[in-house]
Image 1: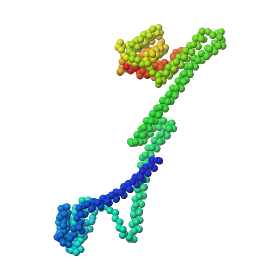
Image 2: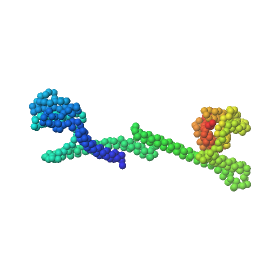
Image 3: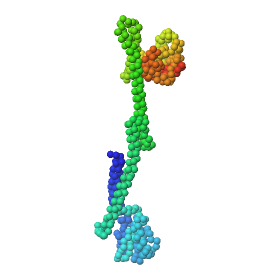
Image 4: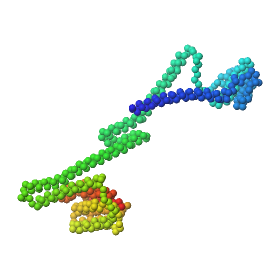
Length: 462
């Protein structure tokens, strides 16, 4: 059921309920009025109940004790007896003054209640006066002996009044329900419009209701959801682009060695007498390249698996790096590289998988020696910084483009954009190194630019 129809039904039900409450209130008020009237002092001491032919025998002490008053007015409008409170300013009244008093005594605005009785035999009026405590002048009167030519007119008048009242109430209910419903349906319709845009692929759609209520909260939730969806779509597209490029890179890097292997193998099969060591060595070399690429892909896939776990042990990082450097010094010297190491004497403990961490430093040192010429200086520094161990591995070689340094840890990204296998590796070494560092709970990043060398920063939690 639509909101506007539901609201209309609710208002109609409310109309029925309030009408029933009004009827009940009238009945209760009428009953309460009768109960209250019977309990008031003025109704216990009425002029009729106190009336005596002999004025001297009228008992009025209880009236005086209850803050009331009693007056007797004879046939000539003289006040012959007055005790207690009195609202007559003089002892002799005129006929018109007494008539006006009798008329005003029944006024709903009077501040005193009067009970008046006339003694036909002795020709005098007895008036009992009490201050008004409360007055409920509400009553519905119907005389069963009522019969006249006005019956039809009265009936039609009542019917018309009730009909006009009901019609006005129905019209006001309809108008108010539609007006109220619009405050619900308008923001809902706008939210539906934005939702349809989002469903149809417009991920930039954002609601703009400018409301400070529950619909405003719904608007903010919708916009947050739209932001999240747009972000996820962008990440998915980026992931698909990366996967597509990754597939092309794999095909490219495997195609060349496999083509060479097949070419040399076919030549050797067709010309067995001319096969020599160079052909066999070329087949082996290209096979090794393909195997290295496939091994790197396997290792990267293994590190990305949620089931893979490192063999972490508490390790003195200073001692580990000293031992690692000792294994590399001979290779650096034989390749013509200078070196400088700064490792503190004190112990600095971290949790390491030494086998996997060896691969990180082997990749970093291999990159430094592969892309830089002889005479390049390689430096390694270890220090404690803000609760973590920081390792800086730098060189003063050729460096790489700053834009490329920001994505160098992605698979198959190489400083050599021509993807020449003779000048570069598989393009997986730094991607694997980053995965290993991340699994250790650390971080690795590169600062470099062309002609300024490269500095790799590795942070590990202590």
